[in-house]
Length: 466
Image (cartoon, rainbow, N blue to C red; front, top):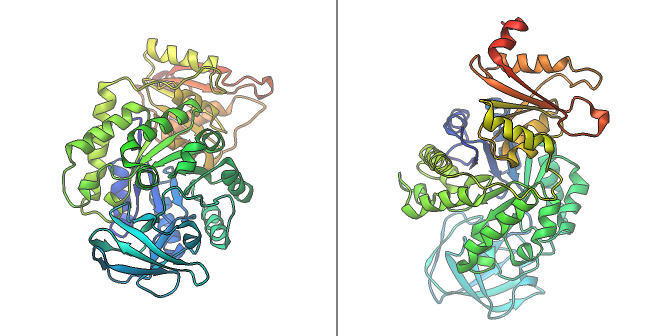
């Protein structure tokens, strides 16, 4: 079992029930939907399909946020170097989605489109009419719904507009597990959203700008997960600093014991070709070594020619890397998840022949604490809260399972039922030697105060399992 998770974006090429099943069986752990493309009704239909195919695989829904994008482009616009184009919020040469663009740009500033493949110089700005003239600095093609980057801009992301509320409401009502927030700039930005959506979905803060890097510590502390969006981040900062930015974000997320997803162009060559480049293989391997929790495929699985091959390739590289190296441990000093019980479980796993750890946990504390230890065996985290159980699946080495009956606080009898359920569902098998941990005495204030080791063969015989 690989520890590092694979996130795959569903798009037109992969949206059928049959293809979703294929992706999940090939190694996808988390399905992603990009709210910047297609309608909310389309996304709702895909969410239903994913839930029908996989009960425990979480869904990440990216909301559009403040990012400026092109719109109403029915056929690709041919961009010619040195030609002047009019950009506006109303019909013109290039139409865009967000009027904030005109307040962010400055005359003679260089702006970019489509992850930096196109660049333009701002010639003039008419704030009153929300209109600007820009000069193309290179040739290319501009497609619909592609991002426009204005390096160094402050998007004032803590203020929510009508569209923000619409997409946040959709994410909450549709029952997705994670919500990706673009261009997160501060703790205030995150807490504004939390105030509206509550504890679910969990918030994935996308680090995409200089302000995101500057306020990284407060953002990490208030987020459930981070995403390194290398496309926008490399344009908003500098291409030659992206490797350093990636390592900084990973190290910060590890320090706060928060999962971190690395995104953008991990297997970009496989959008059109069956095989990755050597640099892509190296990129994925180094991301695993650096301490990423999950790696994300975007165009590779949304619109690419080889979506299944991309997933299988990424899975193979992750597995081979994990076999060859010892995944680095999180810094557990003075951390809330530093638990004596988790330390004891780590030692037991190394010395007693345990093949699986069963963490019976409602909130996920045990799942997070044990994931940090990078145990040498799989962790099966069982919760009686469905949303929580699915969210565990973003943690390296953890398989989140939902148990339909409520855990009891007055006795320990339900432990046996949970283990029988896992046996019936084939999560544990006759040859397994399992370590079970849970909060057996919730009023004591101690975390994971029960640790037991069992042979599944003995449990089956003693408890008369079928």
